[in-house]
Length: 136
Image 1 (spheres, rainbow, N blue to C red):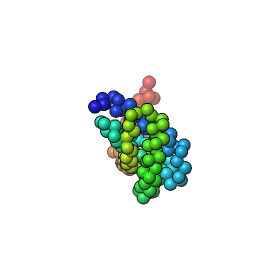
Image 2 (image 1 turned 90 degrees about the vertical axis):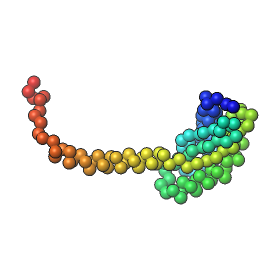
Image 3 (image 1 turned 180 degrees about the horizontal axis):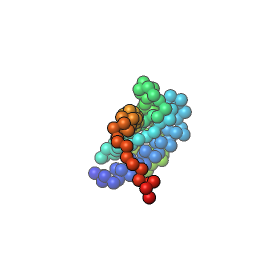
Image 4 (image 1 turned 180 degrees about the vertical axis):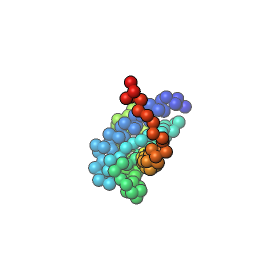
């Protein structure tokens, strides 16, 4: 069995190589600007789970369509990956939509909205404090 360090190194190499392959070699406009957020490799290196996110695609259906385009190109990507990475067996690629970035942006917006609504109320509740800078 592989050590966790080796599994992580292989996952990092797959992530870098796939990012370049998708960016340079895949010309389908449905893909858009895709980011590979992470790659997890199985212990026996037979599978690599690739998590993708899109910042420019707003609708869930657009993301799923782009994901399907990449899934259909997985054989091509695996073949090209074999040319870039020297492994005995190149893992089978499984692509997943990673919603964590979009969820994080949504949560951040909700927090900012809550803070902006709370800020005027908190200023009314504070008593007037003397300005100590003028006393010096």
